[in-house]
Image (cartoon, rainbow, N blue to C red; front, side):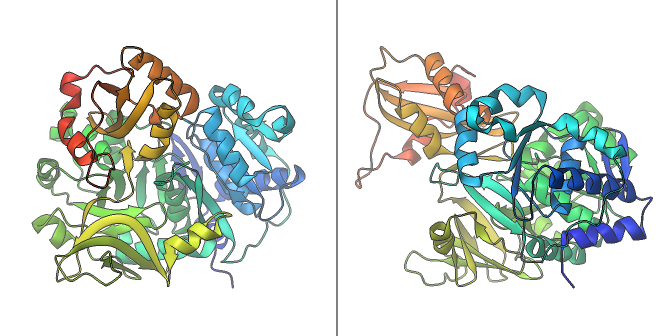
Length: 504
């Protein structure tokens, strides 16, 4: 019998038909209703020519209709391949060339951008998300497709350090193993539990979470856009048991005046990730009896590797020892395994590891070796096996939980006439945690920061556009290897918001 998300979802629709599966901004849908609606969408997709294994992409902000489309793609045997709603037309074109979707959906706000990306030859693929709502009352469909555990379920895009799009492939089996491991370790996250969801569906924090918690019989509460006031209210009113979020989301909730009187006692599992955590933030939640458990993960491996409570309290900088069916390892540059206390590259081995990169066997072979994922991140393990994340070997900026390739942004800026050298680094940001800062050397009498931002807006997704631009008359500092010294520049601009004009 296939170990698939489709089968698990169908089970809950039969066993707990009246349990709320998804409550989207106050509109609840039960497991039975969501399954039936998704099956009708699957039938419509099949009529439009979607066959098992075909990719279906969406460019839209989170919504109930978007979530139902994801379910429908799965039940049709298709592969969900979401694209970020912040993408530029050029970004979208690159991703479309990689994924070659059979159909592409978008919301009204993104329609013009998507049409530009498609060009005249492919606009027949485009459909509005408005088609999903009426299908709720469509005729009863025939039986849905039965996938195999090794069949791809969804593809999450990541640019990594190369600046070029890659698609991380999650199979039905890897997703189910990930979900089962999570539910066994933390029962409050499974059957009968509830979760507040914050991630966009174009990221693993959105789609993986949706698949994970629907497959284990939980109730998912979601917002179209994260709002800390609403999030805090939902956590209390709905007696939510699980909240997994990036540092910035926890910070924005704690900054609310009403946080002081908030009752968060129903939360049994609280995971924090995405950046180094301020001990003061952990203390704020500990005063409420809530342990925020730091986690380490990545798009290729999810993020269920949170510290155990005892470690999270006594050594909050540590991310824990891996999970029940997952292991960490730290490798030195010579390929040997690091001893406790030695820093090196973080490797992950897991029964729920993703299958590799879509249509990229060379990068897959390089990243996945002998069952181990080579993350490109640097860390250190202690004698008990607890991992501490140090920094990213891959030069990635994490803004609001989304990864930005510094190389990609640098490439766009380098196209501008008059730019001789450019480095993109992370600057602190109160709303998103980190934001891109471009340091540029060249003909600075001709270079205008606002024009640079305008160029980036045309070439990149909006969240990748630098919020700060620093112009340097002298060449950028270099190491003995001739590489630009980013460490020195990060130190120079570590307080950039205090003295640079925000240009976006």
